[in-house]
Length: 70
Image (cartoon, rainbow, N blue to C red):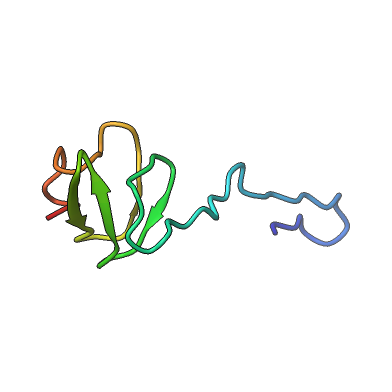
């Protein structure tokens, strides 16, 4: 929360989007999902392990981004 200086009107800011989706352990890859380092997913019939925590986006499917998936 952000507040204006004393004597001024109060201003409140909040995030426009908070993603609370978490994948099932060993679940199928999905966009807009928070993946923690070490999470495993399946995509295209193969298993992948997350190398860096991130929120997935279309185009970041394994194996398209080798920095994220092995």
